[in-house]
Amino acid sequence: MSVAQKEAKKSGGLGETFSVIIQALLLALVIRTFLFQPFSIPSGSMRPTLLEGDYLFVTKWAYGYSRHSFPFSPPLFSGRIFGSGPERGDVVVFKFPPNPSIDYIKRVIGLPGDRIQMRQGQLFINDQPVPREKVGQIDNPDVTEVNRPVDVYKETLPNGVSYDTLDLTPNGVGDDTREFIVPAGHYFMMGDNRDNSTDSRFNVGYVPEENLVGRANIIFFSIAGGASPLEIWKWPSLMRPSRLFNGVH
Image (cartoon, rainbow, N blue to C red; front, side, top):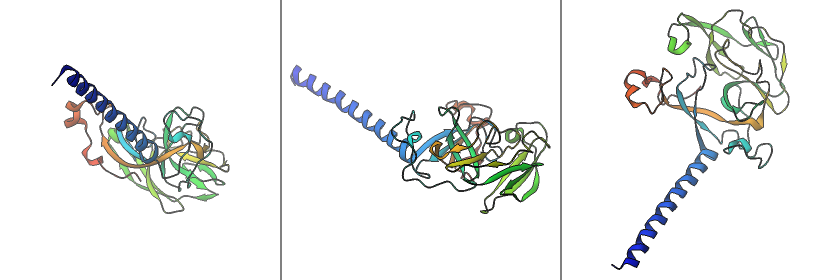
């Protein structure tokens, strides 16, 4: 083989490698934009449903697409396309309205036109109390973040969706609120950890439908203690096997 042939072969090999890399990046971008996006839980606001250190997939097509479906939220268009609204009780990733560069995850409590209020720790929707049943206590700091037993209450929304909430502090600051009237095209979000959640009761406010990113779907990895998934040597002691591949409800 001549020197020229060797150089041509080498050049072709490099070109093919770059082509494969570009195709892989484009495929990953398409999957992330239109199908699934990985998301890690950054805070304890959704305990006990979701814990810090949970890694989950978010389905992007669930509510259609907006500019926030794309990386860096380019202003390609306004509103949503191919969209359908979330259902009450869905666990949703959305862009924080005051600063859309930040992702939040909460549960949809109020739909457009709903009247939402907390009274003595009980949720009211359209002036009707949401059934709330004490189901026990959790005494596990990995779940509650506190070194004491915490009361757990099951709520059941009008559409039948049930989930557990934590009551860290009886008569907490978010247990009694004014009545919120959800505007058209917006949603009212709350965390399941009711006394430790910055949500629509506070500075999150009403969430525009354009800010919805997707619906939380399944936990694919979970590790405690603030460890990184890349710290493989910590998996034997800190990984939470019982949470792997659990659906988010």
